[in-house]
Image (cartoon, rainbow, N blue to C red; front, side, top):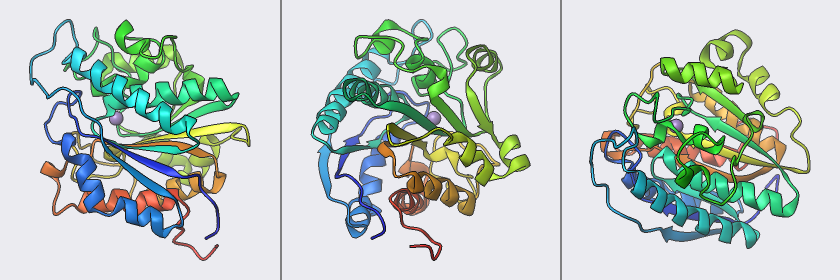
Length: 307
Ligand SMILES: [Mn+2]
């Protein structure tokens, strides 16, 4: 074992209330079946599976004032925020098994609070095909899984932006988005206005993933808590078909591994979301197994001979 990682708590959040397709609610079990707990234990990590949180069913209703299922989204996120904060205060690393990406609101609100309490700087790495910076005014769908970054930056309904009391939870300069290749037209305007740091696929093609990660991790030091929000649709759908919102042209297997390995090398990852895995759209849990493979690299399983 090349590096010690803090003890990990797996928190299953079986819901798709924020998504436009049903099925991400099955993500936690697919990740367990793909062996996430055993894989981390094999890395020498102390793993506790906290089981699944519970919350309201998906009512599958149209949006109201530009938000779909706002009440249910708030309820799930509050449960997750409380569970994550409990684990963080216990000295453990919460690893959220989602669930759709709206859940990052609860998970990152907890992490930001913990960083304030412990005097740590927070850096969020957002691995995703989408910027997730929609608001109720510009969203084409009302699906709240397209809004978490905006909500965390203070743009959204009070029930979500002030889930933990204070808003905004994040300043845009604390976020680095990697792999982006689909941004809605009005969302693009907001992203520019807020000055979000986006490493899109065009930029990755031009400078290469290594340089991108060096830039995204610049300034990360011993006082930094790195939160990784891993939307499985980050990866190219050729190898990761089991997601609700496929966008072609994502990072390939080696690029995705490099991202994870370079994050592991910092030794600063303090919390992780794994979201949007949709087993209903997958092929024999191929995407679930790939996600676990990549998470192993986040915990230092290098495919290179450097250990
Ligand atoms: Mn996302």
